[in-house]
Amino acid sequence: MFIMDSTSPPDSGPPRHVHHAEDETFVILPGRCRIWSDGEERIASAGETVFIPRGKEHSFKVTGEAPCRQLVILTPAASRGSSPTWPRASSPYRRTWPPSRNPPSGTTSPSPARR
Image (spheres, rainbow, N blue to C red):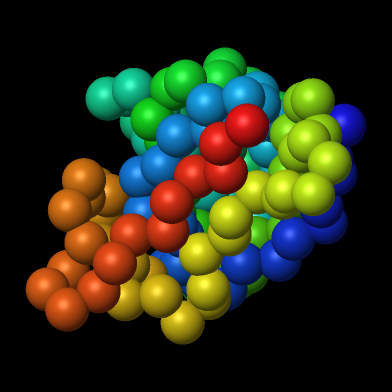
């Protein structure tokens, strides 16, 4: 199991991506996120948990004016010698919603960690 305590700024979030070998769970602490998974959206607020099964395309975007703190849990943990790939906070995807399958011109999409 891999657990990361993450705080994302308002209006930020990663591009659509897939974890091929891990399930991902978000435990929302303070804040709110719009979570997109397999074509469906929902808002998750403090105290809520969202489960994304491996193999499902997904993304999230922080909503409101406050940052969102979440525990991000990947199970199982990345295999020895590898780790999940996380987009940078300065990513050009910050203001894109719904998330696009194609990165903006001149950029590349992070590749998911594959085992």
